[in-house]
Image (tube, rainbow, N blue to C red):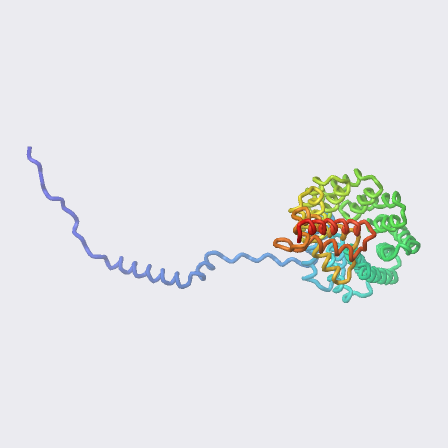
Length: 422
């Protein structure tokens, strides 16, 4: 068998045709052009989306009122802040913003808005009434830290502003309520006029939660606790999101020996407003006062986590740690609180029975952690036990319970010093 080995006829290689060369050059030029004008080409292929129309101030205000209705104060505040940025001449936006700041406990926000709106509409009764509420809030804050002199000045400003609001509109119920609040907080001896003002407020608008709240405050300051409880309950029913009314109600229950009811009120409030550090602090402190230290510690930890700068919550948490013998945990919390109270003391604000307690707790926490901390300051600690006890004795004197406890601590430190031969 013979195999045919004829060679394959492969096609001959040829050079590129003229058409191919022309196409290649054309594509190259097109590629260079596209690269140099990429953005223009993209814009031509992908059209720029039409921007959404800018929201109006009125639109933000509408959203704010809906958030407010639902109890979402933070979102309501942000919406009104946007409304004010777009329309800084609308006094009503400022008034609503002040009222929200006040409900949310934002003193600085309320005062800043008050300063702006009073220049805008100095004779508007709703403006003057809102400004009075801001001054009341500031007075309460100053009173809480023991600065009674400054607090009284702020209460007087609230009184003056509320009186001007009443002159502008004698039917402004909230103005009468704020006037009553300023009078009774400035001096309990003002109870006759305060009661008259708040009764007028109720007659004008019995469905106002603010009016009912201040009527309760006036009654409570006169010792009419059951009547005050009824008014606080009315305020809660009228506005379930009004945390101040629920807080005041809980404290009134607590201090009239209905502690279980007080604690339940706060638990319910926390369910509705789980991000409010004041509520956790209040419940934690009530549990502390009831001797339920482990549970108190848990709620106070939540309060500090929600607001790490709340001095009151830091002090309360440090106290709870101290009572649970967690001295190492108690010390940093108490040091933060004591630093704030010491700074206020250096500015002329006297220690109170409450604030002196934290100085004593810190002194004993140092001593029980290491007796050498009576006299030695070493990292990470900021003070000595003796400094704490001596400050309490200087500020409170030796006769009261705080002074007596400080003297015990000072004696223990001196005994240790003698025994150690230092």
